[in-house]
Image: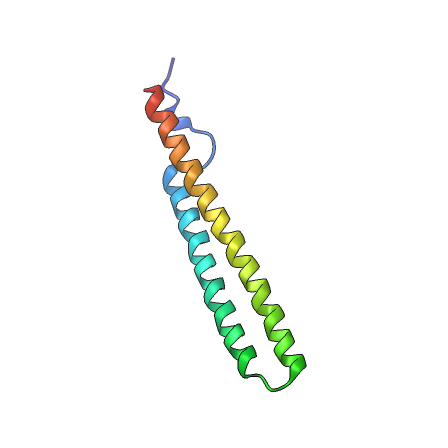
Length: 89
């Protein structure tokens, strides 16, 4: 029977690492944007503008958390898959 290692289902470990890294970077970028928006809201004189900036900052924080969870999930899935593969050898 042929070796099925080269015929894997799903993304390769390198692809999973790249996706995890990409999601982590997106999380960092969203955190930075949220901080910038919060700082801008602090100096905004107009209450409506301040509220708009705070709402946008909140959305960026939510996005940051989501990307962070995605990065963690992809990373853990990659580690788990690597562990299962190592155990089956």
